[in-house]
Length: 401
Image 1 (cartoon, rainbow, N blue to C red):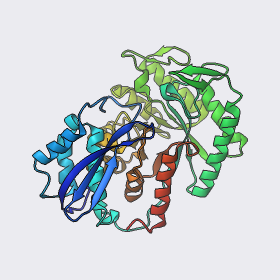
Image 2: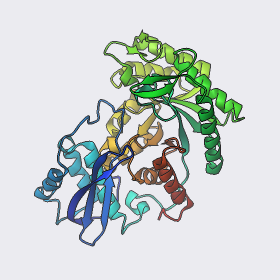
Image 3: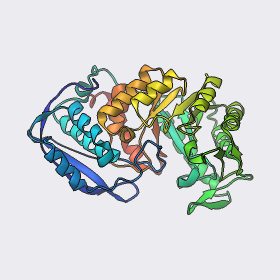
């Protein structure tokens, strides 16, 4: 069981509308216990979503609150596991984002009187910083922070150092160099956003650009290269089409060869979602061909413990991205993270591109010891700074117990 059984009695569940990082209204749920403890949470959302995630759930949050009351969840003792079990049975009508917000609100209310270490059933030991996967350049259809012309959604640098002050200083220098160089680049428009283009329409030019900046700052060897390809968006049902760059359609086998060349020529160490979620045989072939690299399932797994365990058994990936709202409840995301770590896959926790004020991801990462954390561009994404600040507090040891 992920959690210690700490029953509480729900006095009321309510909601309000709050703003997310895209300045759009989203549902924030509040859970109040009989002892007066109150927890609140609003779920982040993704712009690029997997085939396993909700697209649009058109439900009045008031109807969710009424359903919870009608089903008798108020006025009787419940622990996190029991409340989450109920929510997991209602993922389809409620939607994963609403369900996760409710689950996190219950967890936050319980935290008023219990320590995180106690709730997670973990010893109160010193929590450690994860290695940071720093978002530097963005491509695809949602490129608006350091945007580049690329079919792939994110180009990241994974810090080898755990010295946070050093990594943040280097991050700032890298971001400043990126901005200076992008001022001189020609622009094209993708999905209504101006993005920076290169001499040729080739995703490898983005890697050359990023490597040139790292080398120019004297940081060679301090960071590993990482791509989030979101390749499910490139699949047209028969082949992978790189529509923003060379326009070529590639079969699964040819796309594996494409990735092999990038891994070889650019020493790519981390490759996230290089294939469609259902192209399972190709996942296994790509992962087997590169045992010294991390082939990472994000949309492939969609933070589901059963899919993560099945993927490990079949050798589909060597890493897993864990996103709380994908799982749908606090209990489910803990199960997913534990599944990744127990099967020997590199676990990378991650927020979503449409953020809220939640710092639950920071607590999850530290309490369960996830080795990696994806973080947005700190210079322009203050929600990432908020989560990183919470990790600083937790790893100092004063907020963990």
